[in-house]
Every structure is written in structure tokens, then in C-alpha cells.
Image 1: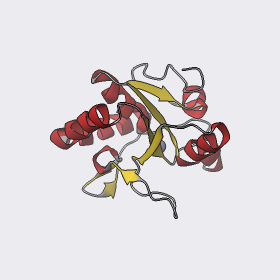
Image 2: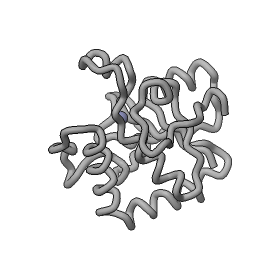
Image 3: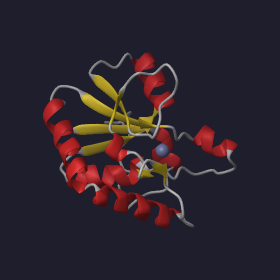
Image 4: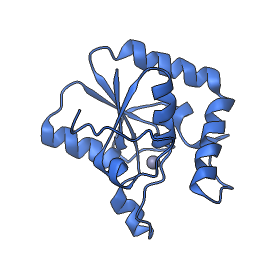
Length: 154
Ligand SMILES: [Zn+2]
């Protein structure tokens, strides 16, 4: 089963542009844009005890920290993965966070270090097929070679 990983803005511009039916947008961020009312999968958000992840000095450390937080709530995470598999037979869940290359460039970076990338790795371990937006494919800092397929070419 396919799972799209993208940003709030790309999710809505793509759905609007392509009129994609059967996509269900879900937030995996700590908070979502105003006026958006979508389901949230809190245990997939990059946080520990409700707070933003801090204390990392490199992308590797950030990804490791995120993976450790998933591990620390393994049962909840597994329950949500099973929900995705069981409840989305006919539609594609689109997991959204804030990261876009425009947003990163405003901060002075030309890469995307995003928790949706290691999250995709976990989802793939459980038999899901992660698809990324072009920003993540082109600029995302990979986690164990997980970035492979764009939803545009899938
Ligand atoms: Zn992100």
C-alpha cells in the first residue's frame, strides 16, 4: 500500500491541481497550519514529551533521536501503522509536515532534513510503499536509501 510523504503546502497544491481523489491528508507534525482541520498522528510527530526534538548536532543525530522517540512509543506507533494498513484500503494516506525547500532556503539551507524521511523507512519495514514529493526526492537528506519514488512517477 502506498503512503505519500510531503508538506502541507505541496499536499494541498497538488491535490488542488491534480484533483486527486482518494487522498487523505494527515498531519504528522507537532502542529498544523491555521484553518486546516485534518487528522493528526501524534506519535509520528518529531517530539519527546510534547517538546520539539533538541540536542542534536548533525542530521544523523537528528534522525537517530527521532527513531529513538518512535522506539520509546513502539506500541502506539505500531497501532497507527496497523490503522494505516487496515483503514486505507481504497485511499492513499498523505502524511504531511511543514518542510519544503522554500522554507529551508529561507533558513539558509539547501537541503531538507525531515522526520518524514526516517518515518518512511519505518513504514517501509512494515510493508508500506513510501512515495515522496519532489522536494524530498531532490533535496531530502536520505535515511538508509529510503527516498526512491516520487508520487508523480508512481
Ligand atoms: Zn518535516
